[in-house]
Amino acid sequence: MISTFNVLTSSAVQQFKTSIGRPMFRFCVIAQPIIFGLLLGMIYLEKSSVDFTLYAVLGSGLSTFWSSICFSSASDIHRERWYGTLETIYAAPAGFKWIVLGKIIGNSIWGFLSICLSVTVVTLFFNKRLVIAQPLWLGIGLSLMTASLIAIGYLFAALFTLSRNARVMMNFMEYPVYILCGILFPLEMLPKAVQVLSYAFSPTWAVKILRFAVAGGEVSQVLPYVYGLVSLTLIYGLFSVVMFNRIDVKCRVDATLEVY
Image (cartoon, rainbow, N blue to C red):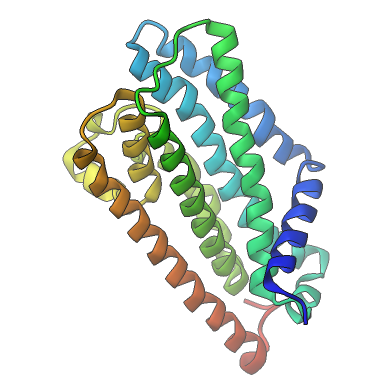
C-alpha cells in the first residue's frame, strides 16, 4: 500500500525538478522577482523603510509566488491533458488528488525560493535598511500564506480538470490580484467597494499579516487577519475536495475526463 506521504513527497520532488526545465517557469521564478524587485525598489526608494520592505521586497516576491501558482500549478492539468497522460495519472494507484497536490507543493517550493531571491537582489542592489519589527510573525505570515496559496492552486487544478474553459481564469486572475490584494501598493488607495471585494482573496489577508510583521503593533490587531486567512484556506480546501469528488463522478459515471 502506497502511503500518502510518499506520494506527496515523490510528486513534489519530481515536479520541483521538472518545472524549472520550462522556459516560462524559469522566467516566473527567477527573472520576474528580479525585475519586479528592481522596479518596485525604484518606486519605493524614497518612501519609508516600512513601505520599501513590504512592497519592494516582500511584494515583489509574493507577486511571483502568486504567478507560479496561477500559471504553473493550475496549468499542469492542461499540460497533462495535452500530453495525453491525464488518464494515466488519474488511474494511478497512488491517487489522482494526492499526485496533483504533490505537484502544487513542488511548484510552491519554487515560489517560496523566489521570495528569497527577491529579498536578496533588492537588498544588495539598493543597500537600503529593511525593517522587520516582528520576525516571528513574518514566519507565521509566510507559512500561512504558503498554505493558502497551495489551497488555491489545488482548487484551480480541480477546476482545470473539470473544464478546459477554466483556463480563462488563469489569465484573468494574475494581474488583477496584484492590484486587488494590496501586494504592490496599499489597499487603502482603492475605492471602498473594491476593498470589500479584495477580502475574498487570501493574499489580502496575508499582506495584512506581513504588514504587522514589518511595522509592528498590538497582537490583537493582527489576530483577525490570521483567523480570516485560516478560514479562507479551509474554505478553499473544502471546495477543492468537492471539486475532486465531482471529478470522480465525471470520470467514473460520465466518462468525460478528456472532454470537458
